[in-house]
Length: 292
Ligand SMILES: [Zn+2]
Image (cartoon, rainbow, N blue to C red; front, side, top):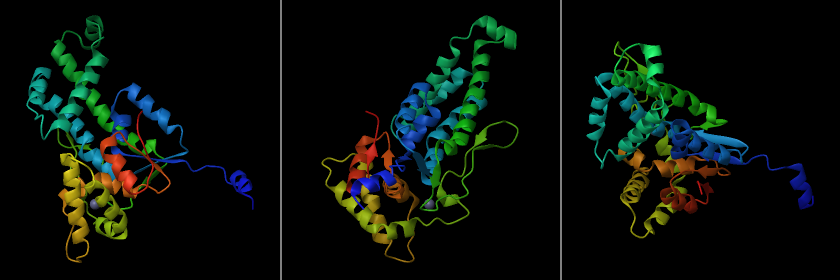
């Protein structure tokens, strides 16, 4: 059959995009302008895909930070106390938590700073500005937690789980009378079923090996890359032994690598982390896209 005929008979109906954690986070919890930016890129594809590993990363990271913030608005007696707690977060090891919390606080204030005192009095009667803001913050962050979890699956046409990680993953839930959210367990280690991450590494050990080689060629790698190289090496070494298990720490340091390998071969991996995803995708010959 001439080539043009094949093209006509099989139109490109399979433009797939795999949504990585950073983009999923942008889409689920950031402002409208960011969501529009993501939507515009997604609209160029026929099929949106993500994985349960991405959902696990979302739960362990951004969602956990939202739960932290929401619970602070409940356990603290005023918004100034909430800010005091935030100011104690470390710029070092808690930088991801800190930046998410600050961004979310900013979005919250943007939403409510236009409220007129007359509107507040009409709705609540005579109450302090602090009580009003705290009341609104509790429902604002609570809604964000519920909606982002619910919308995770709605964004995609297919949710894969090649590693069979955390098959019993659950939404954050409320327990007790004080209305705080609980988000545990956040990692696959506490799942009731054992994942097949080790088998996944075994099946794809050449691919992970190529990636390791590529990462080792990077001049002056950052700490994250150094950790990834170390953990990849360790995992590729131990998978040869039947009685050895992958450590949670090594699994997390390799999360970007796992997600990239897990993504279907035809899919473009959509991320907001050029520094780390570009060399990873290049090494395993997968397409990757990001914002301009
Ligand atoms: Zn797992």
